[in-house]
Image 1 (cartoon, helix red, strand yellow):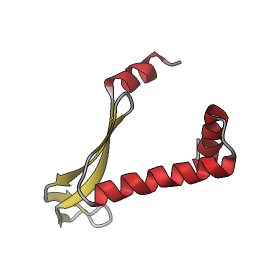
Image 2 (cartoon, helix red, strand yellow):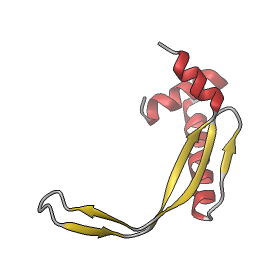
Image 3 (cartoon, rainbow, N blue to C red):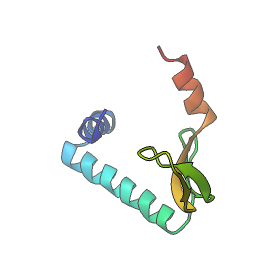
Length: 93
């Protein structure tokens, strides 16, 4: 499912026009992005949690040369599914 498919699904489920559904989806994306940039956590009970985690610096290997390299520490966005969503996915065929 891509973004356009998701817009159509939202429109159908919520009884909205596709234009309104696209605006709602983009507002959701912007709200989550803004919260994560501020270092906040976004929790949606029954769906999952968006958060920012710090990855430590570590050693790696350059795949082209095989030489060891140092990978810098960085912040990354993370999504952890809720137990309910995990169960739903596990039950699906």
